[in-house]
Length: 239
Image (cartoon, rainbow, N blue to C red; front, side):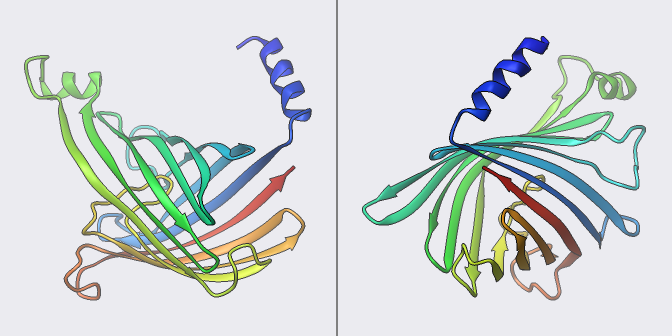
């Protein structure tokens, strides 16, 4: 893009009452299909103007199991609103996961959320499409007449979170049950149970850590073990 675009964007950003958020984190863990430990570093940025927030980010996976380390990419937007005194939010997203040079995963969806002092509830719906790339079609001998994609429509998304302190306290502990994250959306029967500790070190800068257990089914979370991981990250808010 032309350099003038960046100058115009910078001038608008510096003169607008907006807030920027930059987030970096690392997931490390093990699951039933990882063949050992894995690491997933991610960088996410967000731009908030009044009640609208736009967010985008990249995530890499190591060790690399395929020919190249393609990053996953997400873009989303959300709006905060009130109904009487109750706080709500609604948003939509698109997620691109190039987990193989031969196949790509595309997901898009929407969610609605309710936020209180000590609890948040989010629920939504997404569609997942896994499609062969041109390379995959060539190597597998597929043509345009073959079924080149797998579609999973109308998957339920949910997240239930409880906070020990009020949500905007400078330190907090929370527990949550969910089937989705920034770069991972599971089927509704494969939930994750997690615990987070976050602390603001100085104004606008916070560190956090998550410990998460992922199951492969609802009936017995202990028996249907899939994986466990730890996340450590930093949040930087600039007004």
